[in-house]
Length: 386
Image 1 (tube, rainbow, N blue to C red):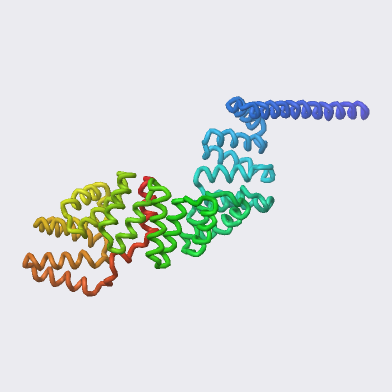
Image 2: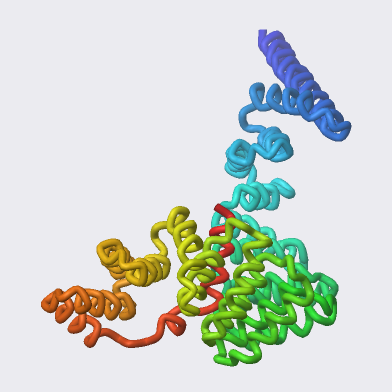
């Protein structure tokens, strides 16, 4: 009886072993088939094969990792991220998984989310140039320029021929207000491309930040010579000339920018303002009215419209525009003075007295000094991306 029980027990164990071996063999066959389909570029069939494996074994991290890869190839990054995270929860040590998750997050523009997996991978592979670049660009994409700089600098040192890396590094230096860094990188860029309009613009912005107006202007002139079609190049030069009260030449540059990009709002607004400074109200008015129709939140345009309407004896409209300018930019003294003088000319003494009082207590910094060049260029770039 004892021998018979042992026999049945052995047979039972043998059956389990045989059954398990058969299952594993079948799964391995399915896996090999899925991998083969992947390698042959039959992504839809490969995805179905991996889905079948995942259904039969929900603990199979590899299946979810490959399903993430299939979704990423179709640029379905949200689905890819979901599958990668399932795989990560099942087996965090799966080769390449952190990298693929980071790439999917990066391509989905979740730069903050991509930093953790990229950092985990960089710890395993500290000399990986691609990871160094990706971490630098992830911080760059977040606007965390100060943190991006060491990664981008290290990557640029290891890839001495990369112009895009140096441009990203120069932008990071500029936007973290490290102007000498911009100028140092500018020299490296010129060594790679002596006719880089973008590099000349970056150097010009850095020089403008240091107060070197003449140097900044010359850099933007060089940028125009290098590539007169470079986005914002004429606007940047025009703005520098505008801040120096060179309104005739500034107007020419703003018009050149509009010739390149008729939708450039800042160029149109500052073109109108330049005409106002030149007392050419007939040319100013259509530019200002076009600008305000596109974006009614531009205080300078309302100020200029107030000036033009006053000159045309459209005094009530002028008051309305000056009041809008004050509401949009309460710190600017110019519309208060204009409104006070307008009230005075209309015999509204108490209103004029109130506006003069407000103006006299305000900081009388010039409009030009209140706006940095790089901020204006950044506004223009953001506007062009809308």
